[in-house]
Length: 304
Ligand SMILES: NC(=O)c1ccc[n+]([C@@H]2O[C@H](COP(=O)([O-])OP(=O)(O)OC[C@H]3O[C@@H](n4cnc5c(N)ncnc54)[C@H](O)[C@@H]3O)[C@@H](O)[C@H]2O)c1
Image 1 (cartoon, rainbow, N blue to C red):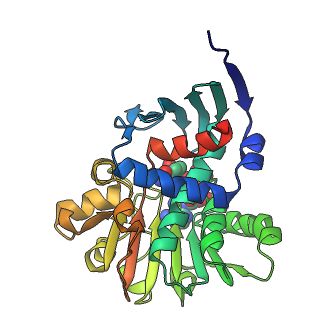
Image 2: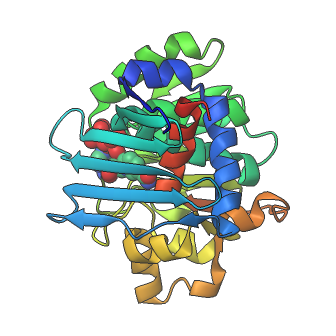
């Protein structure tokens, strides 16, 4: 007979136990394991037009699993409420899902930025100043130490508030909010999009010729942050999993439908981690989030 334990972890517990650097390393490792076939990852169950989401990841080599159940309401703060349940050999952990979600979504953007952004990039613009925003900045700053950060939100006071909250974590970084898209994108080297937009946030020609763009916002066919022209002309379009992206990422679905993007031009992040191709133009990383990322952070909490 084995004994088991059960722990309940708040958002503060999760944040205290998992610094961004560890989350990035764990998510990177998990992407390679997903590519090697170590996980059973059923498609995300979405109910009520994406209002209720259930995601599961089963790691075959260890027999451990993570199950995340969320309610997403974009008209509420916080938009995401739910739990992640970790099931391991020695017990169960039930943890706050919003903290795990922002951490692992930041972490995968950190992995992609590290693989794709110019080595010396240090100037970032963030679209969206909501719940995901701080960890998007923390993740990029972890892999490409920033010298300047611009935040653009359609609700400018939210951008200002985010900047004042991040100020203490970013000493020496030039911080500003932008009132228009052109100003926001001038001389930028890394763009991160974390909005619930259903129309592209900027035209492709507002971007410099050499830039890396992360987009985390869309998870339904009707949502879109990136313009087709960017996907058509980027040197590399990278996603975490082609199946998830073609099912759920609005900009990928739209660009495939209009013929501006073809499936063979879409790469999976795991495939370029070991030897990222050299590029001198634009690169794009689009994520919708997969349960293996939640598993990766939950495993750090389980200390197994
Ligand atoms: N890829 C993933 O794994 C993943 C994980 C979590 C959340 N998300 C998605 O990311 C998006 C952002 O999540 P959140 O929790 O930060 O949401 P949120 O509602 O807390 O914040 C969104 C912010 O975007 C701003 N915004 C919306 N449309 C805009 C536009 N057109 N231009 C500029 N700003 C705009 C809003 O004013 C708001 O401040 C949501 O769509 C969410 O579902 C994706």
